[in-house]
Amino acid sequence: MIDVDVHLDMTGPQQALDSLRETCRFLSTELVRVAPGDAAAAAKSLSDFSKQLRPENRVIIEEFVTLLSQETPS
Figure 1 (cartoon, rainbow, N blue to C red):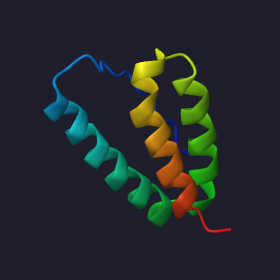
Figure 2: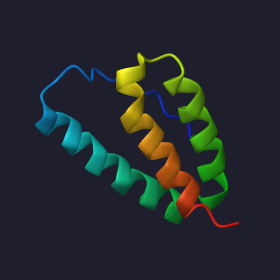
Figure 3: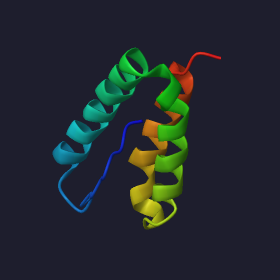
Figure 4: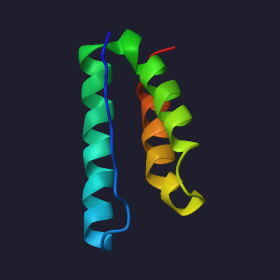
């Protein structure tokens, strides 16, 4: 089981948000490579977490969930 505690401040400049997107892409790929069975659970946890964010800040988390879903083997 992988336990991830994420705290994000997405009020920063666009460069920081772009960097976070790249980090999410990397993490989704690595999570699926290291623990493919946990990727679906991680996607659900992140999806639940994103519901707590303001709508304008959900975009990056939703992208992460989408990436995890695409990477997860069926």
